[in-house]
Length: 455
Image 1: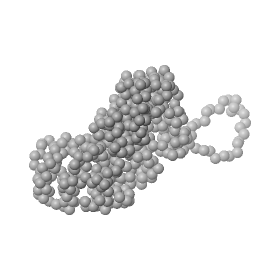
Image 2: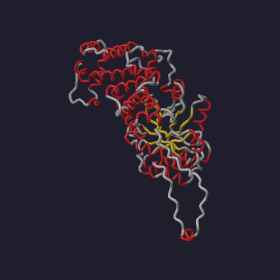
Image 3: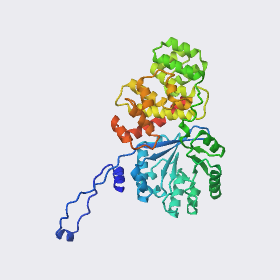
Image 4: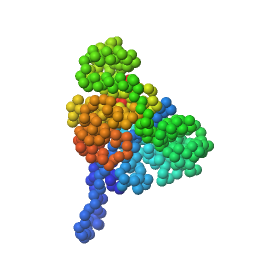
């Protein structure tokens, strides 16, 4: 187990050199032992980082937590102190290579590590602002004075800390709780009395903590936690397909789908401009987008036809796919789902950068976006896709996980899920290294964050 982890951290699987023999030992004859196979350490490949979004009370993405996936055969030893420290070092190393500092100005980053890992050299050079170190105290020795002093030192540098409510309930961890800024509470049971009792117990020991609801399964559970004054919310409720019996197409989304079909069928610019003029709201959004800082234009554009000329067919089509997420009647979590879909599309598109032509990359981006369109439109994916003419490769990747675009979309989705088993095979299939995927992932988070504001 430890050999595999050392291989992961060192980047090689060479055996350590044997210590030099003493002169006395060298003088003695050495008996040759029977030949036995030598067990060499197995190098573990770098892991694709997994992210999970945290929403604020405004239902928009406020933070991400980043995790290092662990293979199933590693789980039994994962809480041993030496193993935990190696994992923590690997996690920090991966995040450093992803240049996480670029994210910290706009989003919080929750980074889970053990308290004993706070003395790792990487921590001393880590960007403090925006970093929340999530302390995992399972199977760790109780907080002592040196550990508490280290926490105080890091807090003075600007670090924030988080703990799990159930892990710091014991008296020996109450001193650590005093240093925490955030307290995570598992609400998966949706047992309100038990949840409020846990919040009350924490508040009696230490006041002024911000509570984070984890394991939020449904939109109803989110509303429950919102009433309980949680500050952040994390769980599968963000992209859960739970309202498919309540379609939210609406006339505005129908207009967008019609425009997308016209673009794909090669409609001329005057025809498209006429359609925009029939929808003043959509026209305003188009002009606002064209004149946004992200487009980089020096002169403002005030006419629909000029805006369409600047956009071009490909950019217009991509923009219309984004509008599908926010073009209907306002729905809860639309902005959070849009940002998630943008990350999927961008990761898939960028992973295809070396292998496919521009048209195929555009279609892979659309596949990433459309993979969550059923969530915001509240109808089965097959019904959504009937509304629009799409290349067969996009439809096949989304509905059947087959075809040339499927591995790129699957890898983009894997960045959100704890599914390490197939990642190495998918990466090999498209000819990309794990470090490539992690770097693309961070770039996509930053890009999607900006673009979701401009849309």
